[in-house]
Image: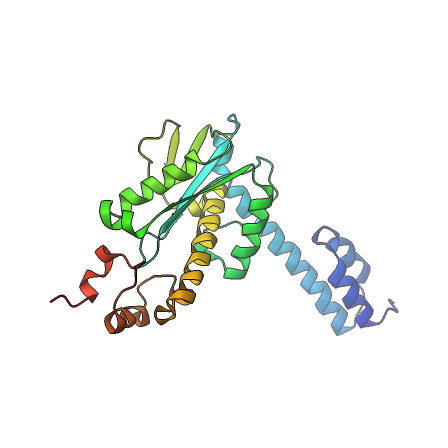
Length: 256
């Protein structure tokens, strides 16, 4: 019978790495105390969740494995095609082929805390990262799709490493002399595109929080420029600011 106090076992559990949890289970699984049984059960669930994540990440590498004969595989994604305000932001990311990063996913499926954590991990571990931004003025002048293409071109051209192939979420970028593979819902199917979606999302969200400090009436820190009911009401009440897309908000503004 194990004689360690439950609080001591809890401390051991807290300090045990995922790869050592099997040893923790073997050590304490015969302990009949409810508190210890709970910790053993938690350990088993952690291992199960970890293995499921490894399986998911393996599926997220299918396109990267398809092009494994190439040296530099670049994922590209955009954030901000739909909002009423703010720029469109794109990111191009080249990851190490043997990256051990976990929990990479479509940025919309991640919490803000998780996105921030993964943002720093990607920035630290990626071979190359580049951001492309197009302004509200460009969006209003040439339309959001063309502005998105321009932002993607900037992201690709800003890379310090020349990619061998571009894995792009849903679209083919014009005027780029690099092989491309457009993947529908690519941010759910490719670790490279998902990484790019996280970088683009965090970058744009930070910009919109900064804009909130200048224009607090629109709650940009919460809605990030998207057309929430409170955002639309604020536009109607106080009018637009300079980061509103005129081509997107014309239906909300009374014209003489």
